[in-house]
Image 1 (cartoon, helix red, strand yellow):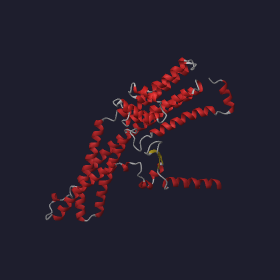
Image 2 (cartoon, one colour):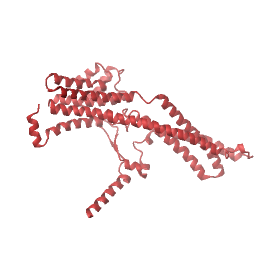
Image 3 (cartoon, helix red, strand yellow):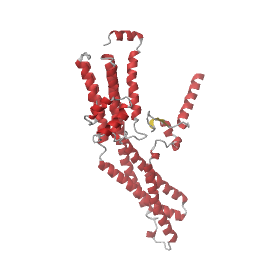
Image 4 (cartoon, helix red, strand yellow):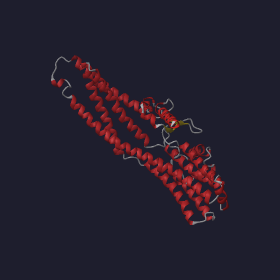
Length: 388
């Protein structure tokens, strides 16, 4: 009982610390040979408590566009509130159409209609953006990793232990992944000058021991969708081993070829999601609606604020100003987040950490080889006796 009670207390303290502790809300890491931090992981519990008010690093709050939009909305609000206040102060007659008392409810209702419509369309847009983001991560990056690791494992256990071949398999898989990031950062494009491209590939791939200079020269001979077409080299490795008689069965040959095709398909999936965006007409209409909503809210709340300020209704003034700040802030932030989610490969701090991923892929491939080399004794002897 005492042990159980102690465990519960420890678990409670850990849970409480995760929620309100002063440690960072997220894990940021600087990849080798770079100076930019990238987001690796975060603690969801800290975003579910009041600790969220102390969080800004890696969030949309660091986007300068969001601040610019808020300043613009506040200026519009002030430009409407000030004249209304001055008018109320100097007004010498009191006619029904001269004040906003009778029109206030209609104005608020109109603003609420636009708020509801914008919120509905934004929620639909966000669900699409998050779904596409997760598909690129799981069925794209995840599938590239799975295909490369599977190839490494099957070749090592069933075909060959040649270091040159095994090294090439994991290097080409990592290169394919990293080339996607280089493409989205406009470093590797079909229109890029060959000498410039050679320099980029040398710095990004050769210097990281992903390719040799000869392999880079071979890539330059076609320079078309390199992140996808490099999988022809993986298929070439498998086909060569089959022709040499090292792949003993057609079934194994088919499996290995399918892994190559799975890797190429994963790259194509990522390419398609990046090259073909959500229909522009929909995004334009949604952006137009949100900006119209923000403008209408700023104008209406500004007019009501000017009259409330003249009457000395401090609480009403605070409500009106708060609504002008909060709603446009939320809608603008959602638009900016969705824009960021549409391309998680272009080098932002919260995008996919490409260098971390390719480094992890290298470790996974090496781990499979080491796991095979360090099997339990009862299995190891029997495995070696029948190894290729």
